[in-house]
Image (cartoon, rainbow, N blue to C red):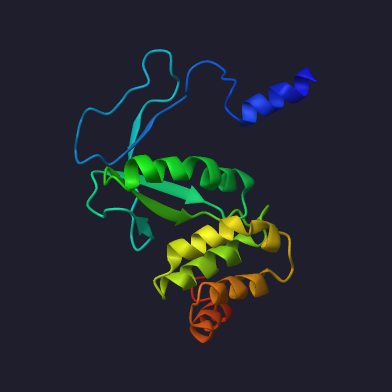
Length: 181
């Protein structure tokens, strides 16, 4: 019983081993006030530039704070973020204009075999200005397509349910327009 409790605590971040091991600061407009780890940390703070490119953005594109989410539509922890954390971020930061959210596809193909095609499907929805609606539907309906050999059929049905042009969407998905290497 205690072992199970320990495992649950670790996965829910309720149990911490010491202090955090590092800090990453995304390019903050040449502000040299980069947080540091302090003497007890073993990984120094680092400035990292992450290109937004043409990735989907939710919120005011001119917001001072940019939150970059790397996610996998088939990942259960990503789904938990979508269900439990994202609504708070949207309410407190995105809707108020304090921050914008950039979604970066990060399908873990080796453990989530349908994640890549789900990512492609979401990107096909961009072509019809329905990315965020499609994004939400993928997370809400993950039980229907995850582990399903006919996941592509589910992705096409989601597009129909969202009233996307089926011919354009299906063509995009079938040709692998947004397939990555």
